Image (cartoon, rainbow over all chains, first blue to last red; front, side, top):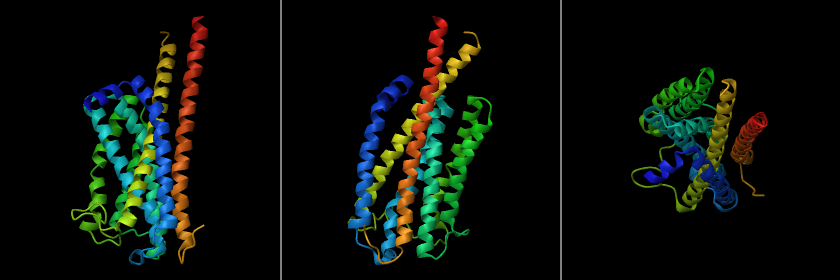
Length: 246
Length: 52
């Protein structure tokens, strides 16, 4: 494992690896995501305890919620690695994760809002701790990107962004445990819990496979944005060398 | 197409959002990659011309 990381730490080796990893992740991700949506829409029986047919929205909403938290943790870990070891590829990864994380958090909020209107009769609840903590996550992603864009040099942008990303990681366990700590209209955990999943296998398996599929799609997008960032940095260096007369 | 007893509009809205966001992100990431790659290729080409 350690060898794999040291191999991928080299941008040229990373470009070689990602050249094949991106199409593989897209292909497998699309197959798994399509299968889970087919199960969600045609195969899975409606669960009357979960509001009938509307529970089919779970197969989009729940993976997006897990992914936005996972992406933020990825952003925080990449920021930590850059902050401690000044590993340039970690900063490239952090920059690539931010827009994907913001989009998936927006997806989670939007699909949750639609589901909330159908089940609770309202699009939004300002006093729901789960909704509010996910909204904070959305602003953390946006704040990270805005902060980086506002600073002059790549180094100062990376440093300020890394500090914000690491501090903001406190919000992730808050999202997870918000329904246990405070009163919420959201139901308690039904998959990731000490007693094991409460969901029946007919719902759980398509949900997990859909999550895996969307996770692969997200990985492919992050790797693509990392490739774009590496090419962009190479172009910046060429430009700087030319301007410097070297 | 599947038929739902109730909330069909809400279910389709969630599914469409779930399809649109990854699709748009996929397009966005590839546009960014294409732009970065073309800019680098252009700079490399002009550098080769200058050296010649």
